[in-house]
Image (cartoon, rainbow, N blue to C red):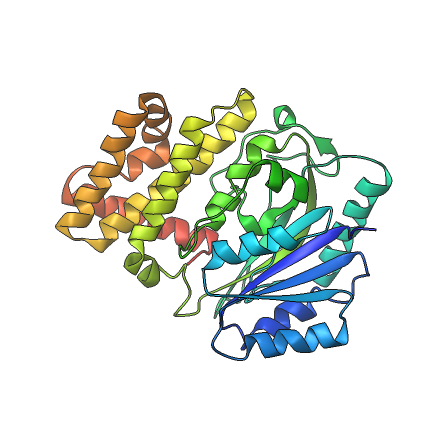
Length: 339
């Protein structure tokens, strides 16, 4: 009998914090399999993971591969997953035990009741270093709680309510039917993970529990602004892949289409602000190219993303306008608590 849930843990040089992640997901039953994907680590990550395999060989598997990046590790986990559902837990994050128990009860209930729920949504918490009060991202208002929904039954998503990878537990077959293959050696592919499969999600369920603890604030972390500025090419690559996907794959459902545009609005605004923050002539030209190229390739999509509130705020003219754009971004950072 296949497990109810496969938890994929991409791990690269994660020896310092992998145990916290694994301790939060082991011991919840023999219908939960854990796939640690060692992405070519050069520290003790694989040896640490092997200790968990030795203790629970029927529950924990170690998949070792050459370094290919976060997306490559998720691809490998998906290839080997046997669970009805799949969740990704990054090696420096962890799950809340009580919330995880409730999520598993829901997933087991879907299976026992013969209900095909394509995606379960739960809350996540920004566990920011040095910040005492943690910000929780909930989906109340946008998603009715504790019932199986279609996209047509969803409501308006607020600006902070976009479905990051941390909030999502997919039915594994949805990811496979979507043909999900994330780019290798590229950061920020979790945005593609949270976007590409959605057209294949026909039913969803919102469980209002604070499951995922998203650890941020390390100086070397990919979502730190200084690091993102050094990796702007990868942010833009993912941004373009998201735009191209939505442009090529128009969906009929009005509510889903509205959500996809909402997600693109946020992603394009982040890219634009980072290009402004970079402050070079070439980065400002790249920002202009992002929007002009989108207008050339898909005028409809351009109009839907560019003339939103965030699209306009991130494109205010002149040096003074750019300062206002960055100030608005700073206010959002403080209000939401992201890096």
